[in-house]
Length: 291
Ligand code: PAF
Image (tube, rainbow, N blue to C red; front, side, top):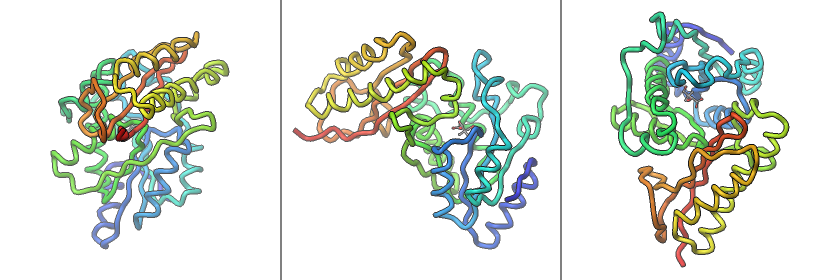
């Protein structure tokens, strides 16, 4: 497995594979890898001749009050895991390599997907997050030039924004979304789970349980989104350590809010919650059943 830190070396590596007619699958990550990331790597391994993984904690997707400085960085462990998955190249640039300005937040070119995909849900409490993600992912796509890129459904809104960007700007690649990987008690795997204390970790399963509750209400015929999301909220806030950011149901394609569920709709039930000071997000995708 090769590890490259420069844009030039990574681009040449990838261009050479493309020139040989080989496919490159790409998994962008911020490191602190878990089984969710590894499921993306394994799928990329199956689908492509070569696999590239990037490990880069992207400063421009963090607001000044967020956890950029504390975000877990475990490059040695990450490289060991990726080696075992037979990854061909890891691109692990420094901040200066990606953003040569003195302060990465002074980045002058932004790629901003506008509209309901980025405005609601996490876009409300993290208004600059998605443009930070789409900007860095566009840069990474330009550097790695993959045939396929892999993202998890846990970050459903991020995935939708990236798909929109790829469609709107005619990037020559396929975006593949893969299912959420969960712990035994349902908690969605996330690098941020490492922030949870023992008690918080115990409580964090409430996030998954609230999604299960919403699903069971829908499968029994409840159509009022307000009723469903209020029940989710009450369940979560019953636990002393948790505080809701949002519970919502939107169209899983457009991310437009839904007030009343209709037969056959493809919906996303989504939640963001603070457990202690850690913000966790999760979602279920569902087709509203015919009654
Ligand atoms: O999902 C992540 O880990 C990041 O948002 C991504 C896509 C690697 C961009 O920094």
